[in-house]
Image 1 (cartoon, rainbow, N blue to C red):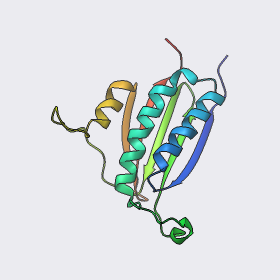
Image 2 (cartoon, helix red, strand yellow):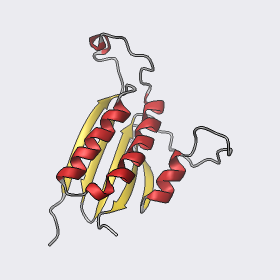
Image 3 (cartoon, rainbow, N blue to C red):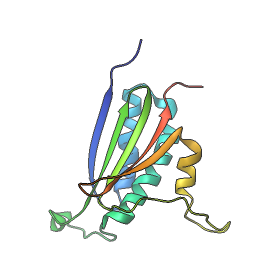
Image 4 (cartoon, one colour):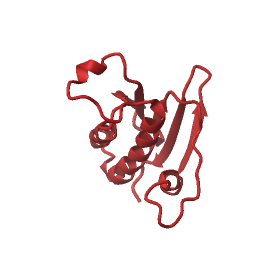
Length: 145
């Protein structure tokens, strides 16, 4: 029997803790949907996409202690997790520039995020929106191997 479509949408302030919070949301959603076997891969890929979105969203690198000072002044990023035949995870940010896989030197400490997304997901892509920003997404098979 096929599960009904399920969707979870969360909006985050583009602050450094958004990646941690997105991993927490993803873990909770997958547990609730009985897809815990996807958690390790999903949170790794969510971390990559959210981190990239934060870098392009114009977020605050060093937020003040009193976050109320930022009210209405901070960009946002969105995480949408959907389940149909596949688990689809989408991350929106306000930059219209699509991501690109780049060759990182062997000793580089960053630059391999999209390579991971490419290797670990069933498929992935980017949709640049006419209304502004972009959605970078990946899909995972929901059946355990």
